[in-house]
Length: 209
Image 1 (cartoon, rainbow, N blue to C red):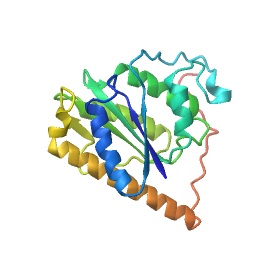
Image 2 (cartoon, rainbow, N blue to C red):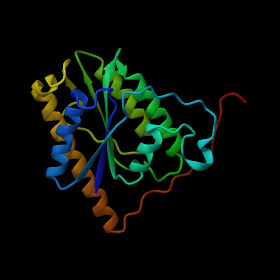
Image 3 (cartoon, one colour):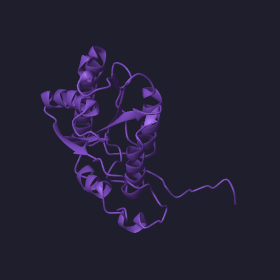
């Protein structure tokens, strides 16, 4: 089993990475393989609503989104980390998530019933609003959301400060352990013949006709 940890910060090895790394350490201690994916520091364009991904489940724009999608298809669980900008996720990260989930989320295999959690890192405030935004992607993709002993947040400004947040780091450790436990439960269920539920998608109701 493998968990893909997506670093949505423009800093490859900053506080967001360190928070995710703490969770990864706990996952690895439980025998779960981990892989990191950094979205990079280059601008990521938002979804153009062109519909080009409908048939291919691949975004028409070739960048980090499609690279991550290929790796996501091979993962069993996910942790998505973002720094907090103006009480929300980073702009590049939001564009990345919009296109990732819209382009390859509809095929019912990349994310369907794979556990996920969001991690937010801030200097001082805005984490809960950022977490709320990111969790909405998981809800729409029918992904079990993994919780921890507190909201999945940690605090720090300059690189490395997040490691001084004792409760934040403890929360990341517990998040990794909880993710590992749920993955093992899902695997045990499959081994016992418990199939994933059927998903009905025939109804698409618009409020304005």
